[in-house]
Image 1 (cartoon, rainbow, N blue to C red):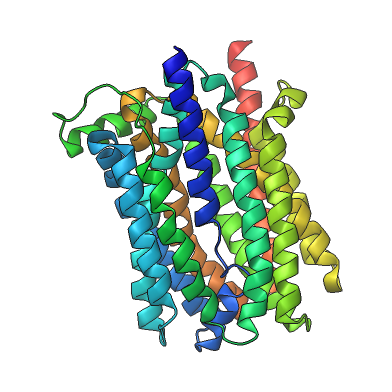
Image 2: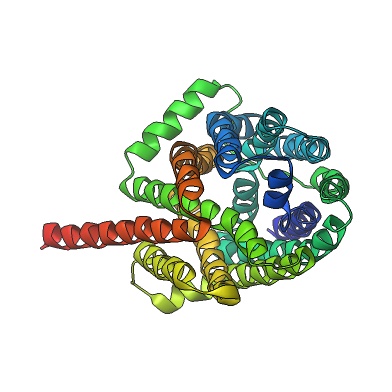
Length: 395
């Protein structure tokens, strides 16, 4: 057991190092502005992101099965290589079609990572009989990542004053360097599934999720919150620049939001204990619906306050939802089930985000926040109905 504890601690150090290097991403405060500078409309930008999520959706579950079959470490290394290449390519795009193609390359990297990294982390803890620490450990990893992303956002804003493409080029180097800690990871032992076909792994995991009421409900939750969260985040940059905020200050705003997200990650395990038996799906969606409504009603820079609180709430949700999926999945299908969770978010965004993009072009970015609040509010009401029906059926 002492050997397994040492192995777990080494893996955690390497995993934290990997996440920190990948988080040195300088593009966050200028990504939307970069695309607008290339002449893309709101609808075209959303279409590129929908293409990204659609590609990710198609590849996420096969990549999860690939990770379950050949190993999570190899899959993470492959994902990181592709991600670094995509960042370098992005600096040279000059049209809607080129952005669309590079987003699909990004999607390959993202699909290979989603589920795989968290499955690796959970298996590392489970091997040492420490899986109860998962939320705390994942929250720490997310918090470190968020702080680094925030600091990188400030630097990215300063770089963008000289050249909007520079943050993409600079970001490619630390991502490429993150391969080093990945090579030093020791893969935990798992049930041997090398003889199973990819199709069987995907089919078995899908059947498992379809027959698991709790996992199905988690998938619905991920679909709704991914659509609303990603769309809401995309609109901050154009809204703030339209108000006259200088690009270097935009980096500072993104830093504060990222640190708030990291704080939420860090305290998530304590937050869940404090709320006890309250339904967290209702809490997360209901409270975020109220915050999006406040963003819609806010005048001037006051919307930044609500945006920061939104990131804090989003940070609280991330480790908790990941732990839910890990807890209800099996060791032999964990990466595939986590990939199905990611696919739920991809499907929701790819289907509905273009419609939201058209809404933004027709009305305004700020008006879209009212629509996002309504979507989350509808889900919160749905969750109340599920809880009431459950109690009635038990009564």
